Length: 262
Length: 222
Image (tube, rainbow over all chains, first blue to last red; front, side, top):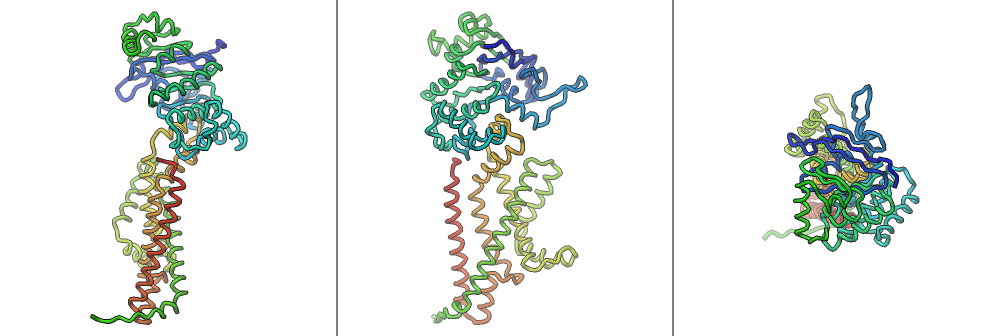
């Protein structure tokens, strides 16, 4: 793992109407790191993730990927919004996996993985098919490459969605509560794929309620509360020595549910 | 009870005319549907993505066409426009123009509803892999929308084919016009109208069945 900072957020703010959802978020993700965002619903985790990928536009502060500001450029000391084409190019460097899978319904598993490779990265059909086959094999779905999303279980769809994101060779992968919409018995297969990616050095920013997974896989954990970073640190610091009262309360609810395993 | 003696020989003698008339009607319907699809797509995009100043003329067009009887539109375009020195289309061209505008208004509503029914998530997934705006439309939104709107497409084709019978009013030699002509020349009332009706019915049924097979083939969206 190198020490190079890949994603740097400084004072990121975002409001929806009069509601301020992010009140100045500072966060670093280093190359090869897995950083997890935890916190109660409405704490701003998902909004922050969506700002990194420009699915939402932040109102203030900076998000830098490899040192480049996301969503704008600075000219004559003033911010200028990037064109949608330039924004698209930035998004291609960041992969995202969604809570509800969001597979393209008119394409097979293979077609879903191939679309970005051919249309965004400009690869030939044959090469794209090879890459898609490789990644579908890796997520254990090589035999299902010709299946349409509606023919796959939730866990399988989510693994295809992960293959679709990784195949683009992004600098950073975002995971937005990717197991929350799954039946309990399907959660493990998806977390297993994520753990393998983490072990191979993929840089990941993960929003999750799977505390055991977060504790085991993360290098750094960020606890968000009401639009702010309330406490951040190593998994041991967060789970064994929580200082913030809200974090203690948050973890207490998980201890109550799952015992002292977390 | 009055006895009616059927004499189908007049029909067989004019069979070629019936077939040519059927072919013309189908051609009129298909051309109008194709033109209407282009118009409808453009208008639906204008209404959904376009600026407000573009949105209300589209709304006006759609509401005007949908709330005025088609026969009146046919008369207006064929008899009215030349009076205003606007167009000098022949009767077939004039009918195609009218039916295309008519189809366009209905297809606008079909596509608008189709676009509105596509979940936001597909657009976000397309953004997330870095697709540019037109690529999202071309490779994700349009293919999904066409699959969603396929049933409405078939219904419109059948409606338009039946509506071609109104072209008889301006003497376009389609099925209804030919049936009336043969009726007038031979006085075989029942035979000519029954034949025309049967031809409409069979053709519509065949179209519906063929398109249902197509729908099943593209039924990957549930």
